[in-house]
Length: 412
Image (cartoon, rainbow, N blue to C red; front, side, top):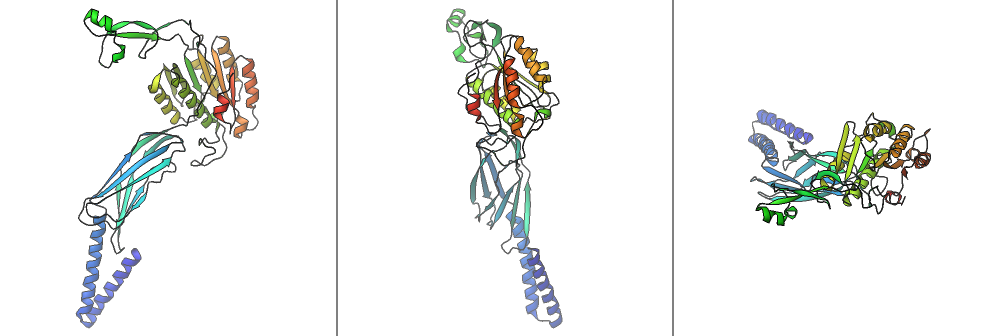
């Protein structure tokens, strides 16, 4: 475009000089025509990116690795001039997201729509937008840019794998001690009645008592005698082992990078989904790098909180797995099931796990073999598994490239 304009400028100057030298009107007419062409092209280029309305619709603000991110763009021409060509450039930072598009000719008050479907490959929080509109005049003399700074956030959850079985927590048998602790979920342990409050579900209304007292009364429940389950995820920097990989590439069908930390997050997300789907009371502990603790709960709210934490997890914690178990494990009561997920090859967390077993907790460990993730000079995961097993802990061993569904569904 600059070369074309320079050519026009050169011809215009030559025609003006020729007209002044010869006095012939033809040269002046050509100069006026070229000048008018430059002015009209400049205004046309400016109008091409104005009086344009663009809408961006994202189906959901939550996605998951392996699933698709669906977006629909709608662009309208609200002006009287047609848009000969219009380029929309998207500056989103979602890996592999290609939403940029060249819109064909838009008639006055016309509309055009296109959709994008991107497979999410990396967990985390990303920004959708901003957008840049680029257009020009029909003669290709000017190009004008318009920046649209509107942005929105999207959270990509880690992937989960289907589990058919996992080591049974303590408390699956009937006869456990009832916990005198109120819960908002419906259990088999009715504890009493209270007055109805806005937001209470109608299926919790005790109709006989309501009829007798002539006011709405709802049932209250205690927690089940089933023991709580806690998931401890080691996000320390000392327990991170990984092989080189590209951020937008994948090493398997689940898009799990060859990193012990990413495998730990996938295992934690899968176990969270497995136990909450079975309506078990699940707690969660990690350092991310700040302390993050979710008290045992059920339902989609607990699932969402844990998944959001795992999606944003960074392996920057200074607290090792030994410190994690020592600081948080002493809060656990007898009969509680504790699931520890770590690739730490040190002896410290093995001693802490053994102490928890002797205190009466059921300890289940998921050991990530550091040697399979490229570590050298450290103890193998198999040796760690044997030592934990001899201490009384139920142990699963995960190596890079394993079928996680088959490994974690083994009966112990």
